[in-house]
Length: 256
Ligand code: FPP
Image 1 (cartoon, rainbow, N blue to C red):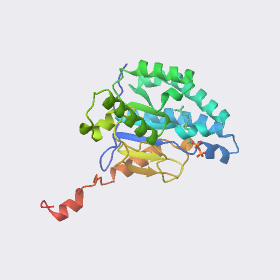
Image 2 (tube, helix red, strand yellow):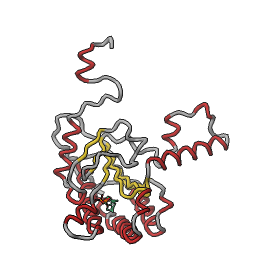
Image 3 (tube, rainbow, N blue to C red):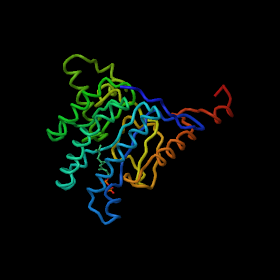
Image 4 (cartoon, rainbow, N blue to C red):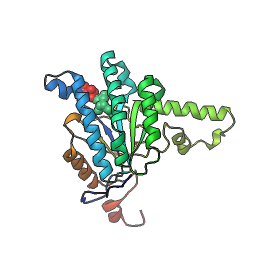
C-alpha cells in the first residue's frame, strides 16, 4: 500500500507519540438532541474513523481507544447488542481505511467475553492488518485496568507454578510482559471527552505517568480541532516522571 506523507502539526513542544482516548458522552449527546442513546454510538463510530485517520496522518505511533469496558456488560441488553453489531460492522468496513493508512489493529481486554461474531471479525481484521507498519490502533474491548492486572498476576503465578519463573525475579517488567498486549506503550497523553475527571478503570498500569486532558465536548462532537487542542496542550506540559526536569532542575543546579 502507498504510504502517505506524515503531516505533523506545528507545536511549541513534543508531539504525543502514544495517545489513549476515553470516548465518553455518546448517550448524553444523543439524549440532548432528543434521540435514543444508540444514535450517539452510531455517530461515535464515525468519529472513531475520522480521529484514527487524523492520528495516523500525523504519524502517531499508537492510539488506544476505550470502546467497551468490563463494566459496560451491565448496560441494557439492547444497547450491548447494538454496540456489538456496530463494532462488527466497523471492523469490516474499516479494513480499506486501515490498509490505506498503514494502520495495524489490535484488540486488548477479556476478548473471549465478546460474542462469537465480533470476536471472529476482530481476529480477522487483526490478521489482515498485522503487517502494517504505521500506527497501531488498539481497541480496548471488555477491558478493565483492574481485570488486566488481575489476569496478568494469574498468568505470572501460572509461570511460577510451571517452574518457568523464579518468584525472586518478578519485577515491574515481568508484570508488564503478562498484560493483554505487552507492547501497549504507556500513553503520553490520555484524552477524555464529556467532562468527567476520572480514568474509569482505563489503562491503570500504563497510565501511571500519562498527561491527562479532559474536554467538555461529547465524543460524537469531537473533531480534528479538538484533537489538535489536546495535542497543543500536551506540547506545553513539562513531564517530570517523579524526578526533576526543565526549569526546576536548572534552578537547583547539577548537584541536585
Ligand atoms: C461512552 O458513552 C461510550 C461507550 C460506552 C462506547 C464507545 C463506543 C463508540 C465510540 C462507538 C463504537 C466504537 C467502535 C470502535 C465501533 P456513554 O454511552 O457512556 O455516554 P454517556 O456517558 O453520555 O451515557
